[in-house]
Amino acid sequence: MDGGGRYLQPMTAYPAGFAVARAASGDRRPASSFKQPSRIRKLFGASSSVRRRSAAPIEQRLPRFLGTGLTLAFFSAVVGYGLWQGGHIDGFIRQHGEPHHALARTVGLGLEQVTISGISQMSENEVLAAAGINGKLSLAFLDVNDLRERLERVPMVKSATVRKLYPNELVITLAEREAHAIWQNNGELFVIAADGTVIDLMQDERYVGLPFVVGEGANARSKDYLALVEAAGPLKQRIRAGTLVAGRRWTLKMDNGMDVRLPEIGATHALARLVKLENEQKILEKDVLAIDLRMADRVVVRLTEEAALARAEALKKKPMRGKGVDT
Image (cartoon, rainbow, N blue to C red; front, side, top):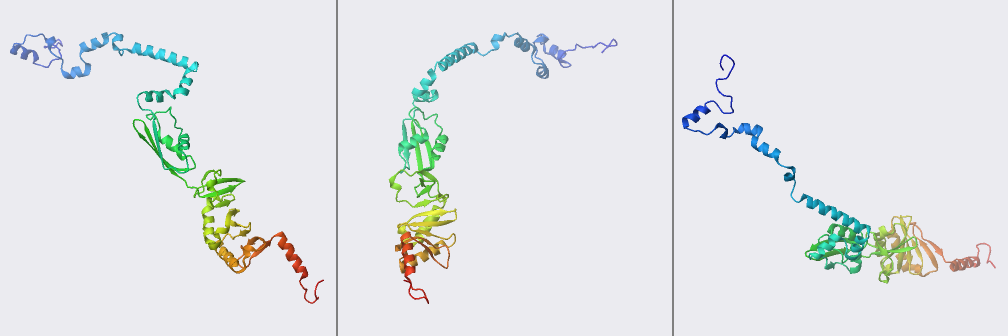
């Protein structure tokens, strides 16, 4: 800088000694042909590129075929709205199924075969109906988790697995609940599983020979009833049903209509007493309506009306002590 505050060398973007080095090397190119230092380009960018971007027309910066795509989308929306308003889409769905399923079927991914295994009490048609499977579906868009959940909501089905085998087969494997007993509640008969789950209404004669339980909550305690039947030993073939009373104790119905009332605690011991009474006195053959075994030290019986009248007459004819014979 001289005394007037002026620089003695030009203020350029090039480092000191750059011009002297050029002259010594014999380089005669204009200074403008040299690239800017990288740190300047990094901060400000090349000026020529900035000018090119700003000068580009807007139509050159839009995606190609944008107008065509928007036009097609507009006309598709208009046509779709018209079909929907005219009810044509509903008619297509009723005839061919959902559009995505119809499209998948056209490319060879339709549902052409369903293999069902593990069923003995249900029919194949019942399984298909429960899963909502029909010929208008395609394998590609089936949700196997949704199908499995639908099948497992069927009371007869304990568990289900569903698999796709491309291009067009669906495999369903079921594990059924087994019919365990018949349950009567509020006048209706149900077929139940071992865990008490209601499988179906009692509408099939093949279940007639199943154990029979009666009363609210008896379905969940059917295993307890079957244990009592086994404890009856030689009398188990004569037991026809068990009624759960107040959710606490059982009353057994015998084949001759007699009721045997068991205690809440010690029911198996009470049945042992019944077996002994039958062996010694043939109590089940007498004119008795009910046998009450709820007290451990006694047996209370309720006679039929005819037996009660006969007993009353016999008591009248029985001699009275100290008063001679009653005439």
